[in-house]
Length: 168
Image 1 (cartoon, rainbow, N blue to C red):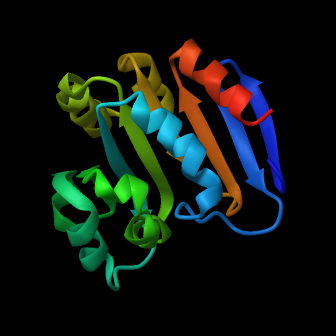
Image 2: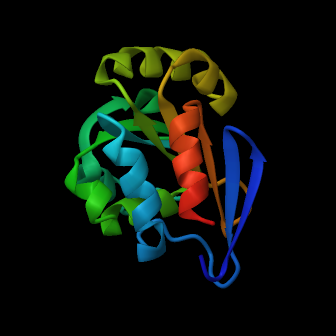
């Protein structure tokens, strides 16, 4: 895709750098990627680590959340919530929530039955590698320290191949 630098780091991880702008999850350039992953998932979650600022975060959560699963004793410093389906298609308010966290991510689960395992695993160890090694059919779209890079990690080779072809 134009103005994107895609790097495949291994079979299950790639980074997509926006060469023009900082990352905005609501931008239409991410539609095909998010639709491809969500079409192969039963549920999607927002997972935020390290809340940057509190102002208006409750409004964004109220709009985006189907259910709050983890909220770090009410501090919202670590947040896991199931996203209402409409917010995957129309990501404007999800983008506002994304901006509140130093390390935001979308977690896609192939099987909704793994939701409890997701919650338990995050409570014990919040690292992406642990989630990928524990839960089959999981995909994680995340932003780390670079403000213009979207990371994709997953553990389903077939879907990763489709994603690689999407950006060739």
